[in-house]
Length: 156
Image (cartoon, rainbow, N blue to C red; front, top):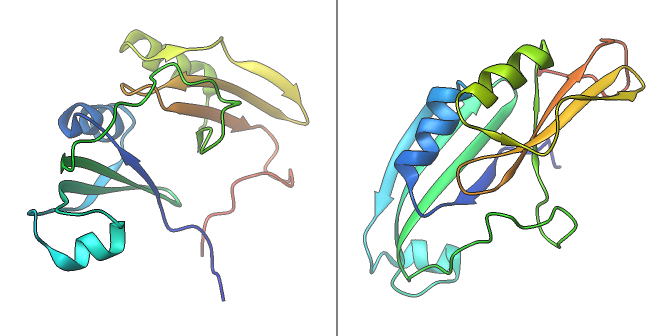
């Protein structure tokens, strides 16, 4: 039985920079930090990689976990920090916010880049897309009506 999504994982070239963004700027808390050296058989089996080694941090906020990986080996290929959201793969992470305008202003002032200012989608939803330091798309969404079918449902 599937109960829900536990986390989204992101591989990065600079774990400390991503922690500064997700933990320090967005307010996620660290659940745990770990690493494994090359030659850790179980890690290689799970990841399907040979001689892998990495640092990992699991972050949490609200009903969401994000797992950040910084691989030392094998050498990762760089991602495209301007990858269009129409390309195949995970297109974005959506964060539920209160007071979208204030969050947009705060994050923009801190250096986060955005595709556009907050937009009203109708249906009591306002949203905007921005980018984390690696170019991954972060949607900030505010649902104005708590009775809306897309309102965040936190676990009890």
